[in-house]
Image 1 (tube, rainbow, N blue to C red):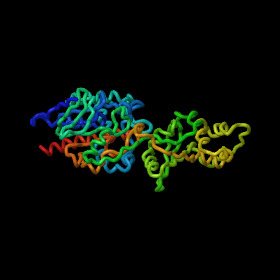
Image 2: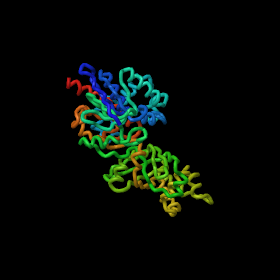
Image 3: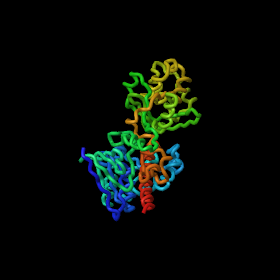
Image 4: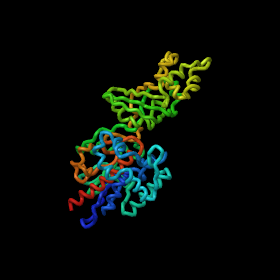
Length: 420
């Protein structure tokens, strides 16, 4: 293919900045840059922008979360220290105000999650792209970034390969999950080739394999388990209990309750080969009362009918008991009650990165300065999911992507100003 070059404007023109990646982080960086007077060209490999953002909004776009600051920041685990200044500069309230300025009103749901009133991502994205175009940002879709050729950015474009020269670049290429929407992690080898430290990408907010019997899989795959309490204690003795729901899959389990523990479960499986969780299938029942109800005479009724009548336990929950308990435990009220309150379930593998909602790993924070500029590559900034952090679903992922995009955009402006 022929390679053509797009020439940098003359010195009297505004600084030209290339933003690579058209998700929330890249778009927010573009917004900050256009506000600061930069000439912004945004490139994305997909035919349209915000593909994964639109996917996230299919079930109702969960923009952020309304919980207190301390609890909110704790969701970022080991990366709280690095993300805290970014989120202090642009946190949940700022994100809601930003959406309001776009004409998108938000509300707090019963779980504390924040959604647009229309429960859709498309209206927000349309308004945002319109505002960016009005501000002068130029969009180039169908442009896959291939790396650098000398100091120029190299793209595979619809018209052939091209070289782009810019005064600074913001990389917001996403993680490694959902490659069909643009996040395929192909950038990792490019950065590693330039000696930029990148932690290996891993699945985050992912499901896990259990190894169901054929009978259980055929009967219950696709069914939700709710309400249920999941308890997990790691090798250090640090335990956590949380109520919610999950879904039985062909191979194991997935869903919001599983995602809340996924980083710890994934790391435990990497370290020891498996992770043991316990499920309380009867939240709200204490063990003595549960034992008493199970021990009541059941006459000619089956145990399944007895559990449904006395406890309201049926369907997939009963199926889980039969899948994991020896038959003898059903004849002993004490052992059966104990299993209902703490059913052991061993997870043997995380599902592949391609299936995960998000990814962990990415550009290491020590490789970046406080402006999110790559120390070894002046003028190159990174933002969004390609940074080495992770968070559960619930608005935390999107908020940090917005916040890091804003920080990278502001960092570019500060760096360019220091060079003038």
